[in-house]
Length: 276
Image (cartoon, rainbow, N blue to C red; front, side, top):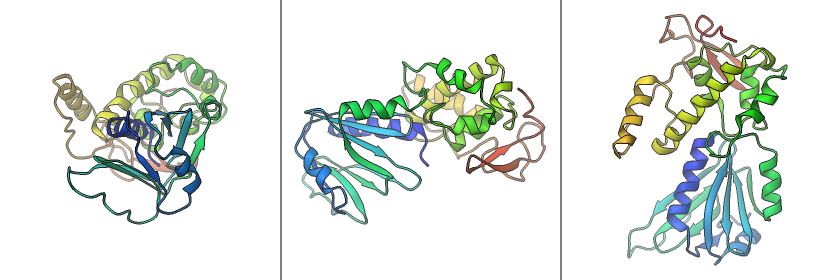
């Protein structure tokens, strides 16, 4: 499932391609025909994200709500000047198109029109999003510190923390040496603050590069590139723990373990990750 940085990056790309324009809105597949007719020809004002939820604002207080789920894809492509709009291929639930850009949505678990009040209700059910400036980590901490579930489960709960998925969960717990099976109520406040601050640091790099970056050398490289105004180039995909079952820990040489936690495979080093 795409994690929060992917949705924020998508919101950025949609705004860049269509904000201030009135794109044609269609449903080639036909399953969103009524919603597309409601949005068609309206000015697209902006796109925004909260965790794994995407919201696209159109004039007249019309809102598009998208959640990609496990298999959804929303691709934004440019159309060279003078070339025709490419045909829709596959099961395209929604298409936004104008003279310069096309965006196709396939396989989402949510594709719906909403009122502003309905959007507010969706957001109210989400935890704080580390990619949003107004996010309040104390809201998440209030749920973590009284949680009997493991910290690994709590990090995947979007009501606790919006936008964090399986990769960030495994990697940030490794980075801070936190035992993933410890119940939330055993986690120290300073440890939680370190995890939050790390997500605030790492997730914007994911938005900028389109990749989840957690390994120190890559994080430092991309931060330096962004500081120089250079297009991020993180190099080969690398992780500390994620999908490294049975391999040697990059820190201590012990074997990386895996277990299903909150419905997804968690990866960790039992030797390094003992901290509460």
